[in-house]
Image 1 (spheres, rainbow, N blue to C red):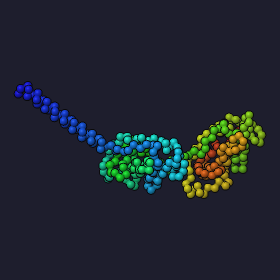
Image 2 (image 1 turned 90 degrees about the vertical axis):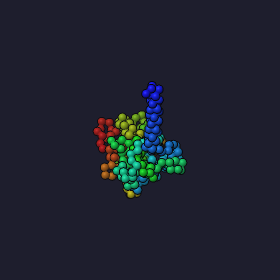
Image 3 (image 1 turned 180 degrees about the vertical axis):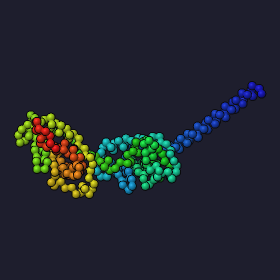
Image 4 (image 1 turned 30 degrees about the horizontal axis):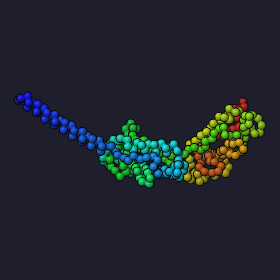
Length: 306
């Protein structure tokens, strides 16, 4: 066989290898495209509402101007903002796990155990997904289109929000007061009450100085007062606050109220509400003690009593 023939054979083989390689890459690219869940990009500013449903219980997040509500209650701005920011992950890569509906129950994606997540943008449903269990090693979560069969594993953050309850989404802030704006304090605990006033320093209205450092620590506790939870609807309807167990008022210069809270005791804690009405919050007992301390807390040289 001549050298010219060998060269021709080598070139032919090289051509075959190149064609085979191109076909393999094409098939692989096609498989990769099919294996990734393609979702539309959702702009956070365009989202009107979000509905998360699990076991017939639904959480409705609705935009009201610049504010958000969770099932009609004020929603926590930070929580909603975090969720909206996570929607940028809708175009994140995902891994195809199965194309069989028989695996949905095991992955937590069937109609009985899955959590449905719907996002509406400009009045149109932009996302409609079923979110299931966490992936291996608690990494990622399984999801599928609600009307689809193929299941995927994704590490997109928005999927983790689907398991949150209404209480998780609600605004837990009871109050937020700047300490320097307070010029007087009134506290009542049962039949005992006292008043603190600020002049050159802090003092008791009935006479005698107050421990200014102790008052400063007390007022610092009002910078952000956070509830541990909320009553159920039936509980809220039964609470009247007609004879509160405790009461605290923070007054500004001139005597008008910055904050006025009534405390109704319950097992292990307190229900709290503004005198004017509105949302009822649950506070742990230790938190209520910090907000309504005994007068001995502020008497110089006296040991604090709860």
